[in-house]
Amino acid sequence: MSLLTPDAGLLFWMLISFGAVFFILAKYGFPVIVKMVEERRAYIQQSLDAAKAANVKLEELKRESDAIIASARAEQTKILHEANVFRESILSSAKEEAGKLTSKLIDDAKKEIEREREKSMKMIRNQVADLSVDIAGKVIRRELEADDAHMDLIEKYIKETTSIKS
Amino acid sequence: MIKRVRYIVCFLLLATIGFSPCRIYGQEIDAKKIIFSHIGDSYGWHITTWGERKIGVPLPIIIIDHSNKLNLFLSSRIEEGSVYKNFKIADSGKFAGKIVEVGKSGEITRPIDISLTKSAFALLLNSIILISIILFVARWYRRKPLMPPTGFVGAMEIFIMDINDNVIKPSIGENYHKFAPYLLTAFFFIFINNVMGLIPLFPAGANTTGNIAVTMVLALCTFFVVNISGTKQYWKETVWPEVPLWMKVPLPLMPLIEIFSVFSKPFALMIRLFANIMAGHAIILSLTVLIFITVAMGPAVNTGMTVISVILSIFMNCLELLVAYIQAYVFTMLSAIFIGLSQVGRRNVETC
View 1 (spheres, each protein chain N blue to C red):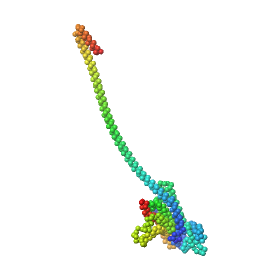
View 2: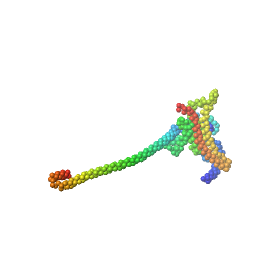
View 3: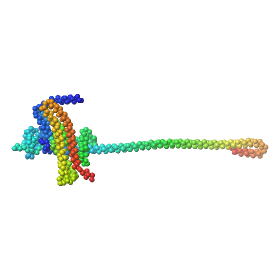
View 4: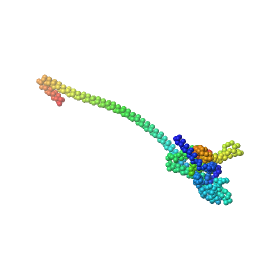
């Protein structure tokens, strides 16, 4: 068989075999593979993008949480500081109050003492008056023993004094 | 390591002295016949000759004779000049090597011959192998969508997607999807036939893509794809290209050249693939035949030539493996480029 003249029989078989291969592979072979690979590529790209987005979001969340923690810490120190100040103020006010109270108590006591003193002074004064009157009466009675009128007057006075005393 | 290599080389040298030439002493070697009988087509598949016995696989002969009757028989019936039902293989003349019908008065005519010859049988076999491989891969993808393949399927994916993304896509452009199945089929069809042609054992080893009928069909397919899918602008550029008027009227110089190139492009595709593969087979066979030719020159020359021949054959086989890929690649790439050229203006139409 000559090399350069195509043989009709072989042409026929080649047409059939290549046609069959093309028909089958172009329908069920290559498009399926190419489509699947491209789908997978798209899927991988999509996954990568999603992962990237998730990473960005995570970073953001982290930054946010860091900010929240920082602000919480600041708040904490602020609250602690305020509590401190408040405690100080409570303490000082309590001290003040206590001071006031004690001074008031002392004042009251002083007043009481004064009152008592005055009362006792009064009593003492009365007693002294009584005593002096008694003594004076005694002195006078000796001078007036002879005189009944005087005696009556004295009697009267005594009565008065005793009534006052009682 | 080097010591072991040296041992192997010594053993090979001794072996060549010991065995190879003795068997065929005294026989005339017809190198041309050996080479051409392999490169060309044949009705049966001759594997080897063991002593006097020929070992081969008979293939079906399918002939529609002049009375439009279908004749179906095995090639073993008409081997070595025997005549079966008026049919025989012509020894010489116009139809040398082909089956002819012998008329009543001895005149020779050629019937319609669609025998499953060696090349046709190899084509069908390779087609079946290719279809099974690709369908196997496709089925894997259908079963496990969105999974990364491993092993053989992974290798095939790299292979297919490399051709798809690096050859077809950049050559055609926008609507490459429409042509990708044809070009991928062409690539893998050529590639598997090239590679199967290099394997010397029986079901493989036939020279398919080195046969002009095969490459002709492939080139014609590209020709039809290019010209049927060609845009209006492509035809305008072919028939009435944008060149100075005197090149078109009164003598249509440029249109003639352009129209000629429409036919020369697929013709070049056909010849390139055919010549490359055929030459590769011829060179490897020549190197092998060299061993048997030099037998007559004495054992020393024969041994030397045997070693050289084996080394060169190994080298040529590696080279042919490369050529098998390159030629499939070139055919696909040029087809894609021709298709891409015929799609001129399509993108503008789509975007407008």
